[in-house]
Image (cartoon, rainbow, N blue to C red; front, side, top):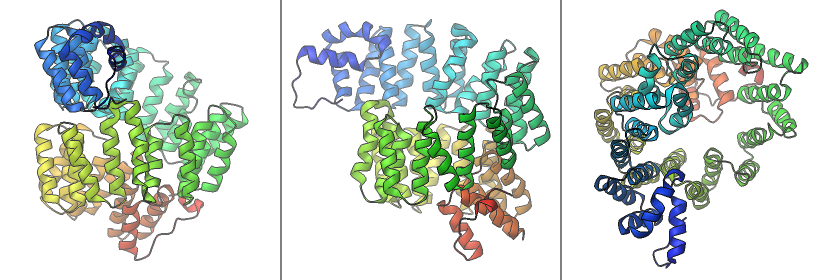
Length: 566
């Protein structure tokens, strides 16, 4: 909601508006003060009028000058809403200093520190948070925190809490889950083993162990553990065997398992939904369309089924049908993911204003989504080969969001794509100096160097360091394989790519995997890998370009049978 500069709201209207802007837990503390405090009123009006960066800075200065914890709390909230990380962290520190017994203040400081790459400070704050809220409070905070800052940074900051010998079963299960999301499978297995020590009959712990074994390709142990998980936790882990078979790329067996569950009347709708997803992933769009169409009659499955039907229409080049489907989902309340798909289609037909209006509506409803929306716009423009326009959005966002690291990171990638790789390298160097332990930045920089055959020893050093932080991250595994391939060591690149693709069957990894096989004169295997990847991602540019470059022929999506076997 915006108040135009020339409007003249009444005092009562203004106060009501300000109260709506305040978080629930601070509105009572600040509402009366705001009505009589010109500095607070000015800060709120600055925010209302859309100058988010200036508002965050005004609030942060107020937090320093005042001794009211509620003011500092509001300042931290505005800093977070406006993605002004420096103001957010300073305000959160002030809030905790004024109210050291507040777990919310400790959590806010920790999250702000994580966003700025200050892992040591985040660990201190999370340790204090844990002492105040115990294991249950940490477990409940993880999902929202992970969404806000990412799995790997949160896991790195929470590791001392998880590693404590005082950590009990439920926290260890949560630790195992977060470690999986952070691509540290050894840590995930370690926490699951500790949970199993506390509860030897735990199906949940066995399900986590099944995942770690599957990700390493250890099929016998993985399937055995998954079957034990189903037996011990039949309600919560009924699909553990299916999930394990899918991770092992044994899709025919996964289908058999799901079909048997349907025949036995076990979670029939969910089983059918999973079969439909498998059809879609295998590129059998007709079968997927039939299954998802039938699922429109199932209340719980209908929204997802409708979304997949829209994606199938898009895959079939029926763009008007797909767009209508996405717009109906948006009308029903779908969020930024669906809006971005609709915006992509609108951009393809040249309707940039309508595309961006769809995304801007997200920010109207949730101002804290402003940064995410600008990054999505830049990414969509880049997809449409509008690199200069994408860079212009990132330049503007860098000003609006106080030189946010996510903006600088995406800007570095954009510069690289535009061929301005020296400027890209300089920006990545600055980011690396600010965030020396961030595996995403190390990996991006190392890969960019390797892809351009520049400073290969430095590239490998950066990537190896990134892999030490996130040892099972498929993007980093792919980068290490690529730098070794660039060194002329195709043989050592191959197992890294196999491992990366097992964790995440991505089109770019498949392109690299096939190219390494091709260089090793294993062309038939390369073609099979590419066929599988084409079925999943028929429009992936890097995959198609690699196939054309090496084979001299335009790739054609394979029949479903070829796409489902390796």
